[in-house]
Each structure stands twice: as structure tokens, then as C-alpha cells.
Image 1 (tube, one colour):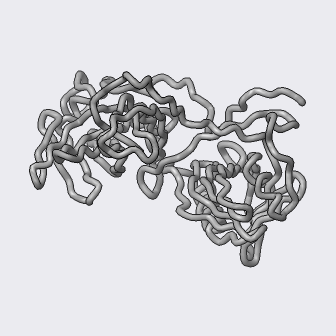
Image 2 (cartoon, rainbow, N blue to C red):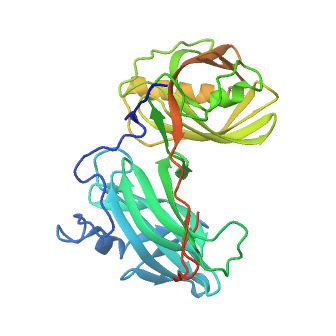
Length: 346
């Protein structure tokens, strides 16, 4: 078995660009002048609530309807939409007495203005420790309760979650690395051939686009920022059904969604979304057509190192790339005697 290292690519490599990741409290210029930190700016900002309303903070706090008390907990600064502007993320708590809901927010900068464009609930009465922006992704470190624990139990399991700002708002994602080498990592299954046995093959490799024909249109495959790829992150439900998350790169933007395979070769994609980088005309046209084609996929076939996605009047064909290694979020229980205040979960 040949050994291989993790291969950097447009989806997962860690860029060493100064200022791309800024932890809570990093400095940023805005309405309050060049010395104002991003936290100082956001302490007086207007934020969305998950029910579609808005609240405006004063000194980092506000009181909403029903005497709900809002408080700004964490802030981070970085580029969320790949336009080189310093955007921001924030975690707010809405304290309703018995419930204590935490939300994560994406704020985009336009000149001297910054505005909340998406809010997502991350939990009730669990802890949040860290908020970062890196490579356009929001990272949140939280401590949650064990599955099936009631909300009155003290959180004890540490997790790291990632979210991307897509055309569907803040979207939870799972990160996956690719291992170079001809042989799979130890313990991986063999490649199948289009029957139920092909399902493991579907989600053990990265798939690089080879040809794209939607019937009345054929793609120019020269992606400006790297090859067009798909990665299937699967969870076996039963002998014939697999569900999971889809991650990919469409030549300019990252794409995310979910999928379901069943009845041997049937395949459907759901909730497909893309990050918000502004692309050139050719790249934007390709991505729109590619996403539309994925939404129309109804079947797949794996034959050796080739994957075919079938849609009405056309097909999308891929060749196998590297082997996938899922970047599993840490899930470390704390010692039984550890205790801490309640705060957030995802």
C-alpha cells in the first residue's frame, strides 16, 4: 500500500493569508473610526432573530419582546463572501429565563456599512467557547449534552462545527480531506460496480468532473480555480439506502447539499447551495447549469474508477480521485467532575 499525504485543494487547504482568520476582538475600521474593534462595532449593530424580526444592541445587549434579554457573546472578523472585505460573524444569546438560545450570525460589509444577512440557531443552554472565520468558513467550538440527555443536564461533550455562508444562508457543513495514493486507507471497502455494492465506492473517493452533457448543452470544463469535484459523506441507513451530505467545488464556488441513494442505483440531491463568491460570466453560467443538472439527477453508476450521474437527456461523468478521510468533529466527553455554565448546541 502506497502512503500519501493530505492533498491541499480549493475546498480544504488552509491558506496562510494574513488577516484571513481573526479571533474574537480583532481590530477593524468602521463607523467608529480606525481604532474601533469589530466587537465595539457589533455592540451597537442591528441583528436578525431566527423568527425574522430584528433587535438593535446598545453596549452589546438589548431587551426584546416578552422581556427576552439579548447579549453579544463572541465576535470574529474575516472574509465570508470572497470579495476581500472584512466581514464578521457573531454569537448572540437570547435569554428567556428557562431557555437560553444561542444563534450564530453572518454579517457582510459593503463599504463602511456592515449588515446581518443570516442567523442560525445553534442550541439551547449549552456552551460556546470560540468563534473564528477561516477560508470563508465560520468555525464554532461548543460543548453540548450527550444524545438523549435532557436539557437540564450540564453539557459535557466538546464539538467543533463549521458553517458556510451560501445562497441559502448559513449552512452547516462537514469537512473532508483527500488522501493521495493509489490504495485506499486501511479498512476501506472495495470499489463496487453500479449495484448496491457500489454505494460504498460512491462515498470513499473524491470524484473529478470528466464530461458534462445536459442534452442541449455541453460544458467547457476549464475551471478557473481548480477541477470540479464532488465528495459524498454517507451514513448507511439500511442494506439498500444511504443518506448523507454532499460537498464539492464547482470551479468558482464551493457547493453543499444532501443526498439519498436507494433501490440499487437511484440517487437524489436535496438542498443544494453554493458559497457567495462573485464569479466571471463563464464560471457563473457553468455553476448555474451544473447545479441545475445535479438537481435533475435520478440515478448513478460506478464502474471501476468512473462515476456516471444520469439525468433526463444527459449525463455527468467523473473519474475517481483521491480517497476521502472525514474530518470528524471532536467529541470528547469532559471528566465527570467538570462543570461549567450553560450556553450553546448545533
